[in-house]
Amino acid sequence: MLIIALATSMTADAEEQLTPGMILNRIEAMPREVAKAEMAKFLDATVQKHSKEYKQLTASLEEMLSEPTWDSHNEELFALLIEHAANASCLSDNERLRSKSLLDVVRKNAPGKVANDIDYETLDGTSHKLSEITTDYTLIYFNDPECLSCAKVKERLDTTTLLKSMVSDSTLTVVGIYPYDNVDEWKQEYFPSYIINGWDYEQKVDGEQTYDLMTMPMFYLLDRDKRVILKNEASLNRVLKVLGTLKGMENCNIEAKLDAIWIRNN
Image (cartoon, rainbow, N blue to C red; front, side):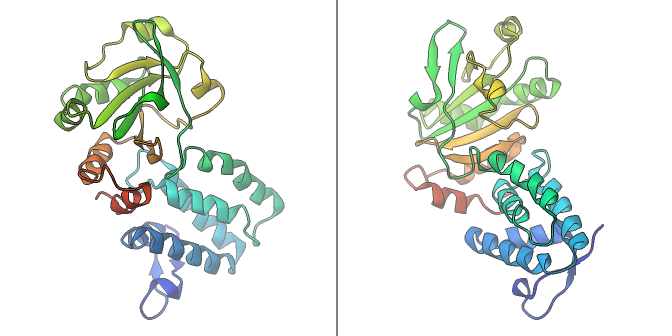
């Protein structure tokens, strides 16, 4: 694995040799705003070195930060990385262009920002909007009846007491969204009774890419104002840990919530 020198700003004494995974562990152990500042300093220091080293580093970090199924997945650091690479002086115009093309993806439904609204239809034929939900939290469960992983996750959702209790207490609304066009399959799919079973009948999620769905199933967690807390989260375990952390924080602002859930596997 790539070995790099960590900038002195991230050590008490001098540079030490660390892998990208070790760097992320160290950064994510810091408070959220400090961590993002140190990540920026580290990338600034690395960009001064040979372009090959910078490209190897950013490629490794991009994979680790962007992959929803990995424990290292972190949308805020991923966005910071892409924005830095889009302006990196050591890269060619064509290399920077690739990162610039990803900026819309990382900025769309970003943590702390208001999520794109979704118009959805339920099995009784009525239409609803995501923005109309009034509970403290909304959990979007993007799913596909033809997805084996979705079926396995749905089995767990059927027995998850935390989600059921939060729905019962009117603290949480769980909305399943089917984003594709096989309506017959969607209508026949079993759903836990506490989850709203919705279909994106306007096909904006898939057709207009209003949400970036890298895999299925996919979770997005929103606060009362529909600001994003979790983006592109594939792990139900992570969702449950975050909801557990957020207990009692219903009246806190979005930044306080993002700070509270920052440390990996909190």
